[in-house]
Length: 416
Image 1 (cartoon, rainbow, N blue to C red):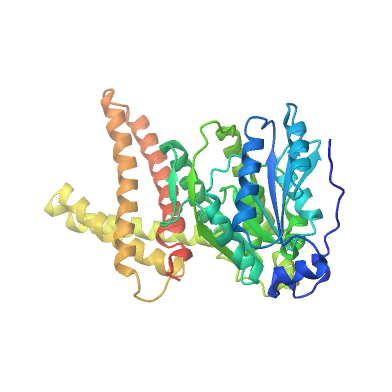
Image 2: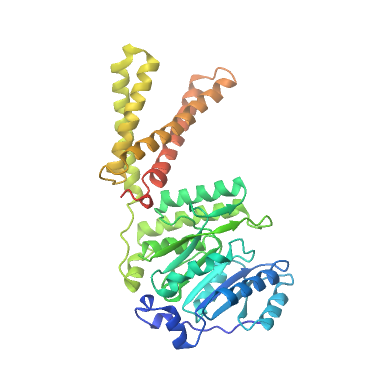
């Protein structure tokens, strides 16, 4: 079994390296410009073909010295032997053996000990078209960006995958936008790169060793003022993927909660991290403050609705209800736009109001759907009906806040 000796990274000893061309840094040290890590666990079927394909592509298309590091996550099949054979076949291929599983753990260890000034990783199935590799690392090599990610959710991306995974991916990124105010578009695409000096500052603060590693790294980088470059990719879903969606989703939600607590208590020192590599980014608006203001606007909107409904009641209950709902929905969106999410100016007002009405319609559908479902099975008791409506309204309120924060007024859409 081949285990490449740990190489202490010297990137942190070069102040200002982030503005230097990585190719010049690598030439000065006599090391590869790029180290591509391929984490694997029991991948005996795919490993050899994927690594040969990757090596062939980089040999013909990548104009700088490179290395491919196979990070074996405690495989129990023939993966270690195949990896050793590939390392013997190609001078640019190395193997690192880890005795514990975890994609994040593998990236932590290999990136922290690599001597290359630019580090990357990709999934062994090569779901992402390798033509995107050069655009991914080019701004890192030139020094114009600090991290780079492939995104499957950009308009320029071409993705082949099932509806289930598409919905899960978009919902996850909506949650990230709504809770952690993330501005990047795709947290979990297995196609990322980072400058070694930036990794040396960020990795000690990344706690997750599994699938949430990517998200945690990106959020820390964004909060610390790092420049994240996004590349639209062509991506084909691997039908044999072994990712457990349920357990991964639970772990991700726990990670989000941990980061929210860390930011609110100051345990995650984003200001200190940013000061080491440049000016820290302006912190996103406090989630707690936005929740309080959203709730305040909601209470005032409800009172306004009741007053309007009573004033218009002579027109009939349905007419009064419709007019009162529409007026208060428009006023609610305008108030949240200004006071909850801090969006000023007239740019995007029409779009915000339209999308606000869409969000309102979704909430209305939840409450109306709940009532329809109850009455479908007979006339419910008033208490049951009231409890169901309260629950539906609470859910509709949460959905409304998430959509307003993560979609309608998200800063990535250029409204701030």
